[in-house]
Length: 115
Image 1 (cartoon, one colour):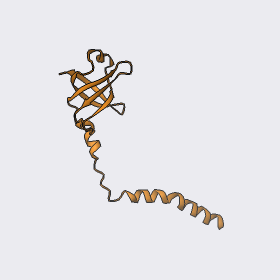
Image 2: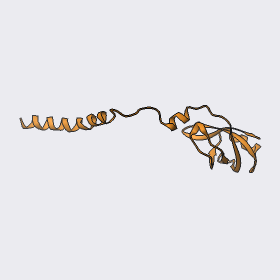
Image 3: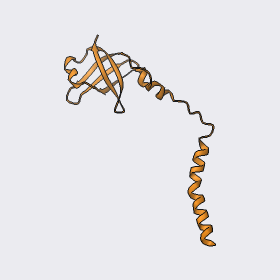
Image 4: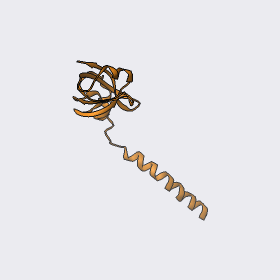
């Protein structure tokens, strides 16, 4: 009988976190957040200025306007570039339009054109 009580207690302890987790989700607003909604927007060109080019790493540092499809405000930041070879066509100080999207989970420049 003691073993049966011990078994029942162990099963209750194991099942309790699952029951609490399921109950904790009741009444929660499960609508997509602003960041997930932002990532579902179509990418569009953003005005930017090239601050630094690292052709070896395939990265460009841009002072850019807001990137709505990624939910990012205006700032200066380094980004990987999908087409590394295209970096040879630009120089620091160039005014460009850049299209950003998420590639392998990272904000990435997928297209860049000189203004």
